[in-house]
Amino acid sequence: MNNYNLAVKNTYNNLKNTLPILLAIILLISFIISAIPASFYGKFFTGNSIIDSFLGAIIGSIAAGNPVNSYVIGIELLKQNVGLVAVVAFMISWVTVGVIQFPAEALLLGKRFALVRNIFSFISAIIISILTVLILQFL
Amino acid sequence: MIRKLIVKIGMNWVLLILVLSIYLITLFFNNALFIESLLRAKDILIEVIPILVIIFILTFLSNLWFGGGKADKLLTGKTGFVKYFMAVFLGILSTGPIYMWYPLLSELRDKGLKDSLIVIFLYNRAVKLPLIPMIIYYFGLPFLLVTTLLMITFSLINGYFVAKFIKQ
Image 1: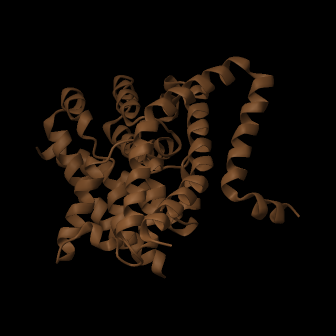
Image 2 (image 1 turned 180 degrees about the horizontal axis):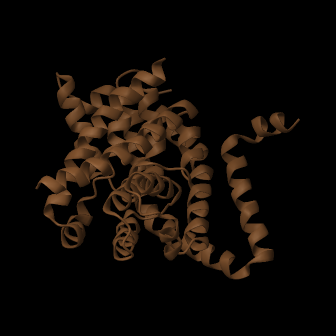
Image 3 (image 1 turned 60 degrees about the vertical axis):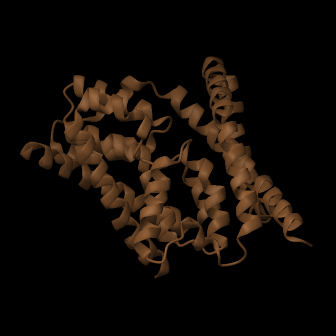
């Protein structure tokens, strides 16, 4: 089999294997976005920076959808007097941690890879949120 | 018995069947949510189809050009620094939902792309160029610069440590 035919065959196999996963994730994300209104996210915060950064990262990790929504919700949360640490943790974990996308990541890139990457991204979101606020205080 | 069935059908199809089951249950108990979710899924699908086409063209080209163990050359450069820089740069430039990139990255990894570079690429997708005006408007330029620098730095740290942890 020449290179071209082999590439077509491999791409077809890749397409066949991944389309059901992508379709499932799109349906799941659509369902979550429809089931959870934006106002829902503000209910969890306590006012304590450390706890809120953790909560922000948890909620951001579970949330899904277009990243622009994370900023829109983030702005709304700030208006509701939620601290910047929590909002930053929420926005960063929204785009770097994917609980909803986890099955797709685990199936295509490996369970261990997906788990370790998401745990590290979650911890990073909390650290970045705290560092952002600390650095901004000095600027 | 169930395990045999899952192996036979394939985990990818099992996942789709499970999600479709959620929709089916929702159809009976909350018709409005079912319709809203379906319409939203249609919108997302329309939005991602062009990206999906591009990604599968890239997958085809990667299959055509890179034999076993050569994909690391995709992020070419004589030094590791250039490869890491390219992973950061391509991650920032890439568009579309994160999950659309998994198939291509999986394919490239089979051909030799390092886990650390995949992690860096995925993390830098958090830096969103089209959102810059909005971020500056609502959060200010210092916020944008600080978060962007921190995210790029942490992408490199994550790339290093995730790869280490996976190897263990």
